[in-house]
Image (cartoon, rainbow, N blue to C red):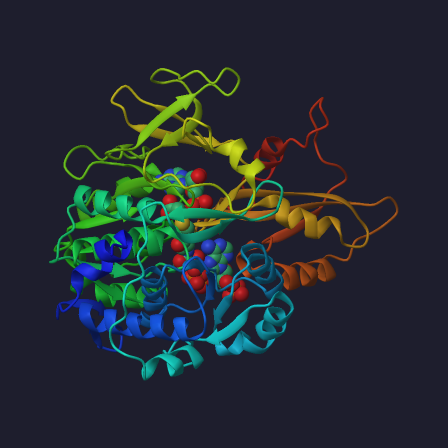
Length: 505
Ligand code: MLC
Ligand code: AMP
């Protein structure tokens, strides 16, 4: 019986002794060995009572076993919910409750707090640590080495990825087997990945980029990955000679360029460098080419859609653009008021349609209807234009969103925390340019009349509530916030006022 995503990405490698994962300690895990680990985990999940359609929330460090949990969920028809390791227990409790997860897989260090949470929400907890130890692996190790793949259809859900929103409430983007498989196959083909490729993988595996682009593409192509736990300059420089290709957020590229060891010689053998998740400055593109002779291939995607556009593999890779629609994907730029499609050169809202576009937000029909049109076009919230050659340029965002080092941060979520602090009348959180992270978070606080808010205490409260990467880099007290005639805070004015605060940091 078919399970298109499992069959297409994983099952095709059954019995193959070819390398899949190369680890910093020198271990190499073959495709077949990886599938065996996944099958044993699938047995352990089944023995735990999980059945097709159940949700599994996973907050673990990057490891081969963590990837095998993903494969096991696909093979078992379970819905995989990867979660940023930086999330606090408060943030996690929302995801677990909202998704109705039946199981939480977490690191041992968070097990006691999460067991208390799971108890109140009726979920179970199993552990998986960075070194591959934990109760999940204990339960798996004696299990049979093959698992009968659970039949699924292309339209069945494979994963939820939580993405925050302008209201500050996160939404679970429901991705089907077809969404993930079609994109992986398209990208592997477009970017000409083959079994001979070795991808230097330093991205986290809880987001679209590291999991559904990097990992799925390599699985579709049958190549291997050097699986680094995170981005580390020394490790990147040390492993580059073993790789043929790399995917990263712009911060990876600016950090590499900032290191004198990153030279033309070091990269001469490389086939491809790909960037995405945040705007790559045209200046970085040019510097990269001058240093290495390689033109970075920039592409554009998002949690709800996987990848939408890409600069060509053969053909002009144009700095400042995100390229052409992927085969099978339609992209249009429309007028926000009339909904009409705009001609080349005109700025409007970017809409996309195709097999990559998600099925909606989990149990949020109104939010789904607001962004996913009946005709299948998804309103990305990005603003852009299509140039005369058909290349898409992203010129801004209609959504109030900050992208720091490739992580999305929704100001509303932070403002809700700041506004609740003693002595605070109101707040505004904005993104300002930052040399390393592209953008960083600045919080502006208006004190309540006669009050002087304690900024140190406010920082503590923010730290307790929100993941580290969302914390404002600075908090400033201001007398008032600029407003337009409708009373709306003019964040563009604030961004302009504070644009140099961290530009050279
Ligand atoms: C880490 N920190 C961050 C941060 N990453 N703060 C803001 N923004 C970030 N992105 C915190 C750390 O906790 C640390 O806190 C401090 O900042 C400095 O840490 P660092 O050592 O300099 O950071 P590092 O660990 O090296 O991480 C930076 C990074 C990482 C850029 C390598 O953030 C990263 O891998 N980003 C990739 C994100 C990603 O995969 N996005 C794809 C989303 S999918 P302290 O306490 O030490 O001060 C998507 C769709 C698409 O967008 O199109 O792909
Ligand atoms: P996420 O919700 O984390 O998937 O982030 C998706 C958002 O990242 C998009 O809506 C864009 O705003 C942004 N993004 C992704 N790739 C690019 C890119 N190449 N250039 C500019 N912005 C990008």
